Picture 1 (cartoon, rainbow, N blue to C red):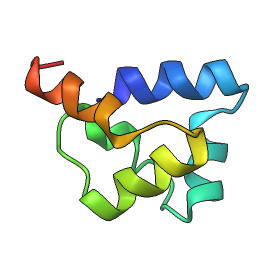
Picture 2: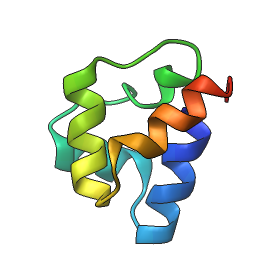
Picture 3: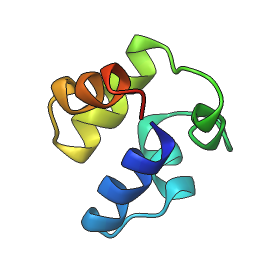
Picture 4: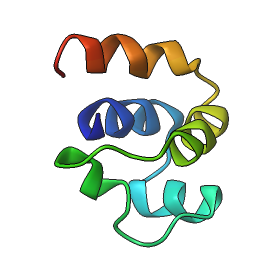
Length: 65
């Protein structure tokens, strides 16, 4: 999950710390998603900010990525 978000943020030209700030998340919260699952609400905030569908994340988690 973290790798996908990092790639999507990179395409938008935003760093992970700036993405966290823009979404109202605490520092380091997105990087923790490399080992744990985010809440639906937090993931929705990131998806909305990055202008992607939640389906992008769903397909990654179903494939084990």
